[in-house]
Length: 106
Image 1 (cartoon, helix red, strand yellow):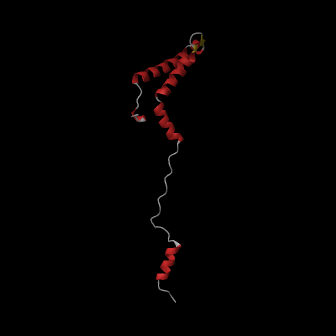
Image 2 (tube, helix red, strand yellow):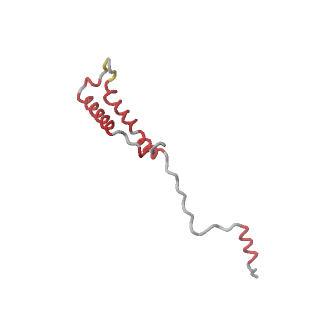
Image 3 (cartoon, rainbow, N blue to C red):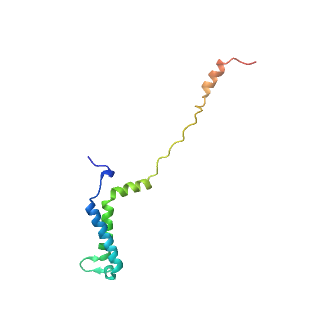
């Protein structure tokens, strides 16, 4: 049986590791200008320093993000106004029947 979205919790060790990787990567890009370049073995270094841990965090927390976006994108259903307590209007047939039964005024 699948678990509801609220019951799914990411592994705290993985979560902490990804946040640390993201923080250290962003800090290294700010401090070391050579980290903003390209390496023959690793490719574009800002990808591995910032984009990869950020995308991994988005995947790990996808259920929370989907629930949050659903609340923003899907409008809440409109509530209908409650009717006044005056009751329903009479139909033409019931008013004719009431006129027939009432005594006629001269």
